[in-house]
Length: 315
DNA sequence: AAAGAACGCAACCGCGGTATT
DNA sequence: GAATACCGCGGTTGCGTTCTT
Image 1 (cartoon, rainbow, N blue to C red):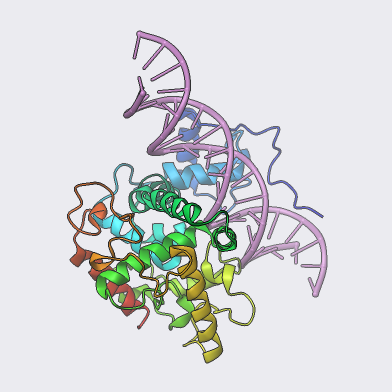
Image 2 (cartoon, rainbow, N blue to C red):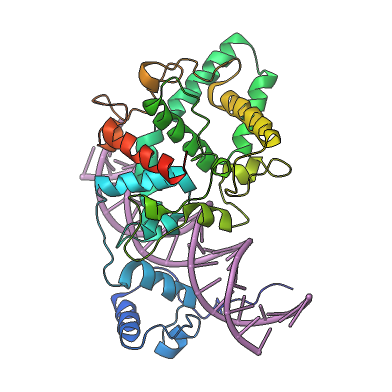
């Protein structure tokens, strides 16, 4: 038995909101509140809109104190850091940015930040494929790579790349993959109240929030470690069995990230990890002054952000 | 100046979680 | 405990705008 539709699709208007509709909704909610029932609200007002649509319009546009326009470097920093930590949990990330909505943050990440940070990945991939193609024809290793790309969500891949970069900044010789930010199950849960990212009104337990959803959308753990090795959102250090799985996972990730025979996973890494392979795929433009110049803040700032997270996760 | 491509944003869709009956 | 209804979230789409050729 399927779920009943929340509204009569044929009877509701779709598409952009008119100023009149905005005014009706805004006036009513400011005067009466939502009444705790978004589905009934449009009928009450006389709007030919779906209740969900009204809710979205209110939350993303009409609500007081909504901030529109450019994001500040501080906001960029928070978004990047939280994305690394918890992935595409936009509502949680937006909660740390007063006046920003999850939709705003999501759009900003997808259209600006992601491109800025990962824009060079295509180049790297193209370069990698070209090299592999020159050595052999379609190898099984390459096929494995492709399968891995499918298995790992884009979100997970991005987080891995970002974390490796940040860790290499902090410790160029260290194992970038031993990062509880990427492997949240490896460390104890901690709250953002210890970090610089807690809002005035709410303290978000990132690990809890991240583990709350059984689906773990876009999360590496959910995608790759289901079964015996699954690490369930942070309940202590992994067992030795888990460790061995993590190690094999790391090997797999190295394979995915750097290709066959990458060894330590640092193949081609130079100058504090700016480059992987032959492409400085973290750089945004040619005027990069620091390895993270694309973020418009200094390596010190970046390290501070990372330090926040290492402390949050009690490394 | 025109056409096509790329971009950015608002809105929609579908699903999972949770409260209620 | 099961069925139902609603809420909230993340992913995706559609379309207007801007940029490039």
